[in-house]
Length: 418
Image (cartoon, rainbow, N blue to C red):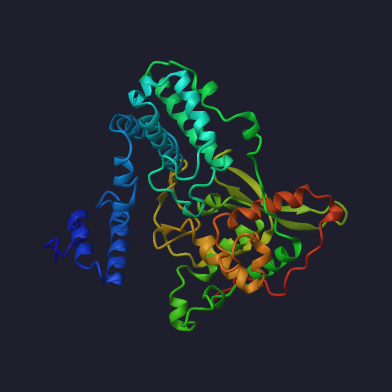
């Protein structure tokens, strides 16, 4: 009615936004319009799907207003032409604005990058080493630690972000090189040595319970105990089919992949092969998982437990047809395995939905998560990465240190349904 035509080809992005504004209080209708926009974008009628997060993207207006105007113009120009990943750009942009506020406080005559000298850069490094949480920041996130000394990672983030900023400006010949940022804007070696992996390994008993819970996952397990609707209404509240959830859990438990790699798995990521036992001569199935390109390496194949391939094949049997989506890492448009309703599985879905469900089923929240985190919040952001570290640690152990584990009697085969 808003477009004045019954044809989908006549629907425009402006008419969709007007309809969303008109039904702002009706959640289901807004969700239906979001789905319609994805369909129109897949058919090429509109340029991109409409989302409700445009106003929340990018830095806040008050954050930009708190930085010096001339420094902000340089930072925004760098942000526009940066070739880094969006997350890296956002992190560096925050560090750049912090340096601009510092310059406005200590060196008002050096609120432009070309005015910085070696002495100013060295003073910034010294002040950053002694800085506190929230200092020169517009909206500090760690309000609990407000006023406490910055962590080593926080100091490194501020210094490394500014070093990359000056390096890009000099490389693009936007400013003259008055000093070498690679030699001046660096964290002292004594502090840099404190940075490194600090894995919190899941103990064997808790890990065995997690694997047993993952291999026997049901629809009822995904509904939190505190939700009153555990019947048909509760099942409808589950975002994705149970076959997709089982495949996600299987890859997370047995493949040792990063969460970004799991989300970006290709539709045909499983390759089946056969191996032969040297002693008995019997053949056994070999499952190879194609891991997509990540931040450190190209795409590669890795052998995984055959149960991973079985769970993926079970999901592919019932997976509805999905549109081709853009892979932000490679820029290719292709089919993704964990795609439903035309969208990739969310970044936080594994941490906020599946891992807590496994913890409830296994009943060992205190063992999975560190003691400084409440066991009622099992979905902290590093939980999904702990399986990768756990697999690497198990590979590094001697054979005698690895305890045998017996799988549960009931494992879902590719033909299993709800």
